[in-house]
Length: 187
Image (cartoon, rainbow, N blue to C red; front, side, top):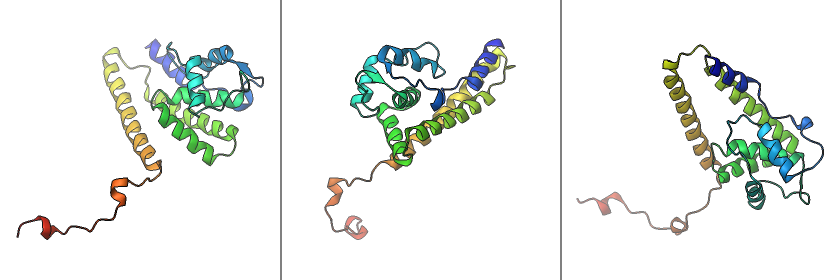
């Protein structure tokens, strides 16, 4: 099937620009909005608006612009945010980015890891697509991919919960004398 071959080819070859090939001149908002869709595989939907960029900056997911201009660091973060927001809440995407900042001192290294992980994920998905799949077999392929996505998202959500700081529940912080089973159960 020609359309499956095109999809597989797109998943195998379309990658974000590496750090060294991101624009070395700061971009204005309209240039950023035109650039980011070229970074990722997508199918015609609005990936990014100026309101989104401003909100990501206000929420701390994205560094503040240099005046009204955005550099490599901004483009790297925006590429990751736009990708992650398709499967995570913006808050969870921010949690992952913050964890990455903690682990990697430099934005270049963090972006490099993101690109490598995205490359592995796209290649794994492409390998699941057989371009000779018949139209009748497409529902099974789509279901398999959806369930793999579901399982990955479940694991991701649980790992994000495990990453959360351990905060004490105020109701549990008061020490109470344990109640024995004999106090609850009759006789």
